[in-house]
Length: 364
Image 1 (cartoon, rainbow, N blue to C red):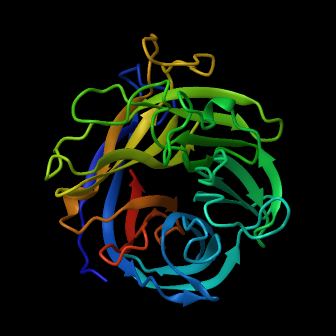
Image 2: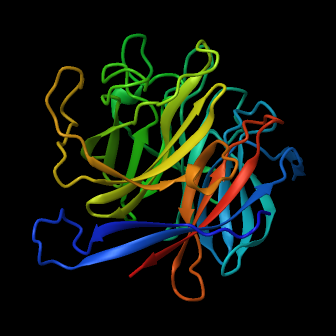
Image 3: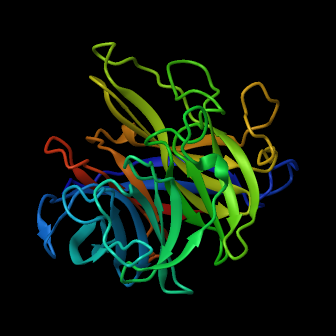
């Protein structure tokens, strides 16, 4: 566990969920305060499975969280965990894994190696169930990305019909490792999700310079399967080239959270060889954005993307940053303010860490 350190990032958020146009309207001030960071011991065995690859986190209740592993049944069967995380007013007090739940396919069997790539998981209290995303399988037949509803035992309850443009194809569709890593509930019947990297027909993967790296934020009614809206979100370009220059680099969107009818929080996570990890949280406003669901390819088209503003930069805290992929609001603090918790994915790599980050959100 790291020594207590605080940092305030102040931003202005309109009381109205719509874009501010009246100078006489009052404004809320919100602060996001860094409290603590700790590491989760991985490569341990829990219920005969190896802990690692934790790519998403969501709060259930009573200090209980759900986390999903992005293990494609390579190290242990595809799975998620229910774990207990206890926080104090200014730090993590403890964390432990309570149980392992194995994911099942539609036939009720465990997944074979590379049949799925589980990434994001969210709990829906009204049905006492989970929704999770897969970026797709990597078998010879290439199983497409999907969103499924499962019960607390990991068994399939319902499958969500997603638009065909998020399928794999040689010249269009999602890129490998560029499918659904994010998921959020607006309410019991509406979800939001996004492709991690631009579709092949929408643009290139983020590079150095430029600002046209669009992904699609999708708002969908899961009761009738209707896509209600789609909006373009522009992923930020990378700033520093890899060392050596032939090294690997990426910037993408691993998670989103619904805030209100016009706002989402979008997490961007980048890595550059020889440089390191960079993680930023943006608030986006969809008020003036174009609904792009009828635009089959964004290349060469005129449209208005969502507005984005930086609200949290992990580089500000002088801490080691790993591959942060998951975020959730946690239990409220005793003073009524909200907690915000992030988790990182160690990729089953001994040189990486599974980190938990704790923040406090206050509105004035």
